[in-house]
Image: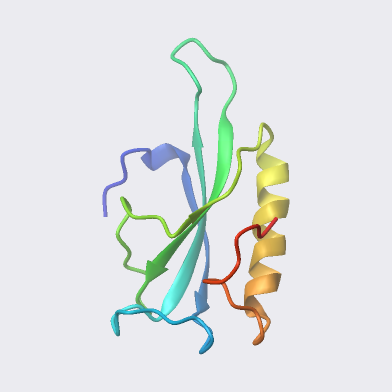
Length: 105
């Protein structure tokens, strides 16, 4: 798969979708958590990072142009990693309903 920001995309986890999450497609079986980074301008020397969640199948295939969730921006890669880890732990809880959650952080 080709990503528009290939160097700045880091896939982290595939998590099985919880039975509480009502997903319309039977092809979607997992959440894919990733970190995406981009420079805010062409002259910028730093990156802004977001935790992004996509609907995926069990093989990890997903539609890159349709993220299900995008976090607020992080100026530090390590803070974005920490946010992704917290989100991963929350999503592993069988009572967590991702669809009904507005603020995950």
